Image (cartoon, rainbow, N blue to C red):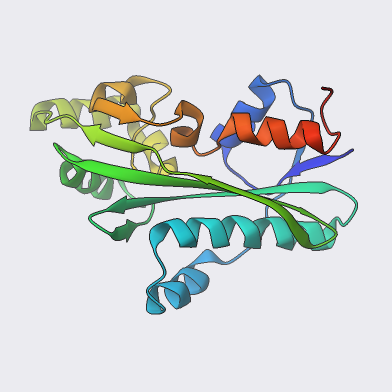
Length: 197
């Protein structure tokens, strides 16, 4: 069975490759911004938006590849009930990390699977993370060392590397923090016959 990841995320692809899963990646080409704007105007919660975007990505690719098992994924960051998107510059990354400093936030990591253009499975996990009260000097050094790689994360951190130093505590699954709740996905793929049992 052909498994397709409907994502351009290098970290998600690395997680699946590291787990030994044979898969292809195909960009979903879903324009997220108008969808998010419409859902936010309906007062949809950040968790709901993550779930809807994961499903939209899976369905978009599944319509083009109806015989494949397509996995869509999305992650939103919620702080005090507000959704925060990825930033585009290191200056914005600095502002984002300064905003999170000393506070707790949630990441909503959603998955959806589609076959023949129809959603057949959904999952969402919401780890909570407490960022430590780091100094401005530490923050500036961190940004200088990690650079634009931080822009690929909605939280502007890379937990799988030096970004671990940002946190006091994390509740929830490590892979969900990285944007792909791996163990539930592997169980689903075994159930569907895409992986041996």
